[in-house]
Amino acid sequence: MLSAQNAAPTETPLFVTTEPFAGMDDRLFPLGWSADGKFAWVLKPLDEASGENRWGVTIQDMTTNVTTATAEFIMGEDAASGIAQVWAKHGQAITALLNKHGVKRTASAMDHFPLVLGKRRSTVVNVELEVVHGKHADFGYTGVRSFEIFLGSDRKSAVFQKSYDGFLFPFTVAIVGCFTSPDEKYAAMVITGCERGWEGAPHPRSIEAFAGFKLDAE
Image 1 (cartoon, one colour):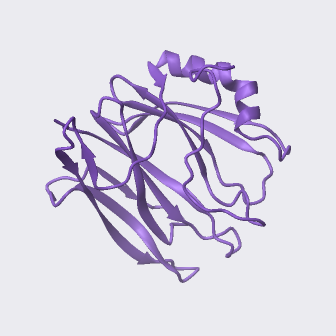
Image 2 (image 1 turned 90 degrees about the vertical axis):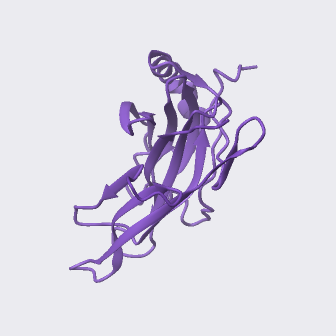
C-alpha cells in the first residue's frame, strides 16, 4: 500500500459536471504546503475540444501570490487517463518538485468563509469581493473586467486584485473556498469564474486565480 506521501492526490470537487459536458470545468487536486507558505496543487484544466488531456502542477507562494514553479504533463487522447494514471507516470517527478520547494503532502480540505481558526476557535476571518463589470464590445455580454478581494471591511489595501485586459473576460467570478496551512499561518483562496464558450454555449467554468494571504490565528 502506498503511503500518503506517495499516493495520488484526492480531488477537491469545485463543480458538479455531468455528461455530456465532462471536461468543461476545471478539476482541482491539492497537494500540500511548505513551512514558509507555499501551496501546491494539481489542476486538470477544462478541455472543450482539444483532446490533449493536459494536467498541470503549480506551486505558489501565498505570502506574495507569486508562482514559484510549474510543470505540465500531456496524457494524450486516452479518456481513461485520470489522476491515478497521471500519478503512476509522473508522480516521482512531481514529488521531486515538491521536495525541491519544501512542500509536504497534507490532507488539505477546502474550508469556506468565514474561517474560524485558533486553538479556541477565537479568530474569525472573512473576505469581501468587489467586482467591476464591463460590456464586451463584440459579443455584447456584461462580464468582469476586474476584481479585488479585501479582508473583512478593511478597504485600505486589497489582498488580491486581477484585471482582464484581453479579448475575453468571464461572465462572473466567485470565491468558492479557502485552504489553510496546517499551522494556520497561511491561506489560499480559490476564485472561480464562468467563461464564454469557444462558440458560445455551453459555457465552461475555471479557476481564475489562487489568492493567498497571511493569517494571524490565536
